[in-house]
Structures are given as C-alpha cells and as structure tokens.
Length: 121
Image 1 (cartoon, rainbow, N blue to C red):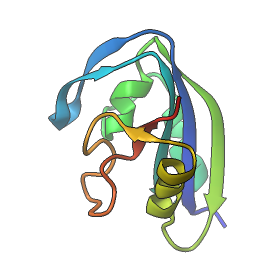
Image 2: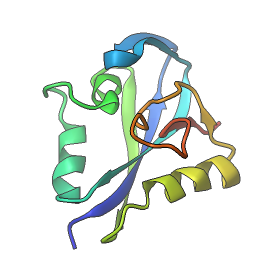
Image 3: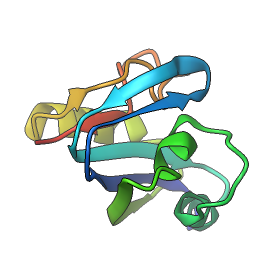
C-alpha cells in the first residue's frame, strides 16, 4: 500500500523568521518539531519530494524545509487506506506535549487541528 500518513521529525538549529506562503512571515524558535501530513495517492513520492531542496513551493512545509537551518531527523510512515493525520497529530499534542507554533500550518483544510507542525521540546 502506497498511501497513508507520515510524520517528519524536524530540528531547527537556530531561531529563524521566514515567509510561509499565505501565512506570511512566521517565527520558529530553535528546537525539535513534528510535522504530520498525508498522501493518499503516493506516500513515498510525497516524502521524497519533502527531501528535495529545489522544488516549487506548494505546501507550507516546503517553505520551512528549504531553509538551511532546518533538518529532517526522522521519517515515520503510516500506510493506510484512510487519512490518519489528525489522529497522529493529536497523539503528539496529547502524549508528547506538542505545541502549535504557527496556527494553520499544514492544516488550513483541517477543522480539528490548530496546526500540523508542533514544537515537541
């Protein structure tokens, strides 16, 4: 099965301020984050795209991942025929003290999550 949800564990090495598409200028403090997303047509291609530095900016996460101070430290895949990204995101909030930093980041089409990027320090 090549569809489902994923989590990118990210480390930001220093405080940064960058423009994130329609969200505008956003501040990110140095630390560890988890981004939760889904890909219901090709999970592996979506994750491979996230690993590329040169790409057309499409999703909020694209803007963050192309910053030189941002590193993906771990990738978790959750193959499934149904979207689980909100459930996985809430698990980080509830069980790992995940804190939304930028409201609407990666969750502009989500009614249950304040953000799909969470600070986890």
